[in-house]
Image (cartoon, rainbow, N blue to C red; front, side, top):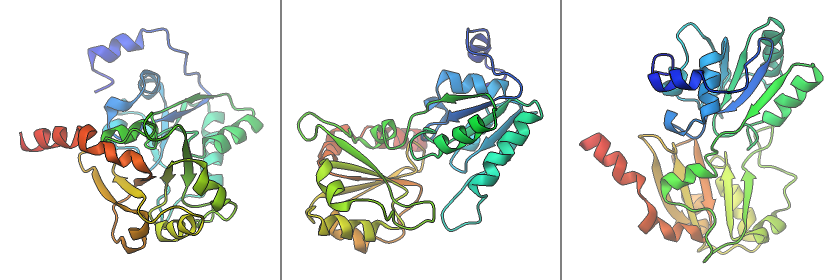
Length: 272
């Protein structure tokens, strides 16, 4: 564990920036297991007085912090009772004003559809010192666990990132779908499973082909990771897709036959 492992004891003596009382660190926890945390995230876990964490932060990561650290669940999951974003930010400010070292721990990266920019903006307006610690996003490095290089010289020189819902939970109304459909061969969609039939319909109407490869990676980088491969034209027929998930549209799916290394590792771990 972080608080007793000799490796992390050495990290504690490293020249990391001090986690000062009365400040908030917005830290990315990466896509899954503790091995994908950054060293600075580990440092923050060992120094925090209180951790305000999202639903997607695994218990294995939370267990790395010393046992006396207060843990506050502030996760938002679709279709379930969730704290309001404004209330989360107010809580961060209140805790910092109490002189605590506040670790705001987010799945993936705080600035990749994680509302980290909104929270940091409110902290700045409240004159609360803060630091941003980037994390590995599921939609970037995390997809390597499914054998999906989101860029490849033979298929695409551009990639587009898209969120599947707006702040109301509906399909984003401000998206220029014809432009999105043409912008890049590969589109990576966050939080898109719920509205995938609607999104697929908009992309098809805007000119994407029904046969375009569609890959859905659920529970990325965890022992229950699963990958569903289909086409854009069949998206409306999908049922009971596990979430959280990242949806990838585009030709990079063809590389999974060679690059899908993680499924074999999970089998060796589970079945010996």
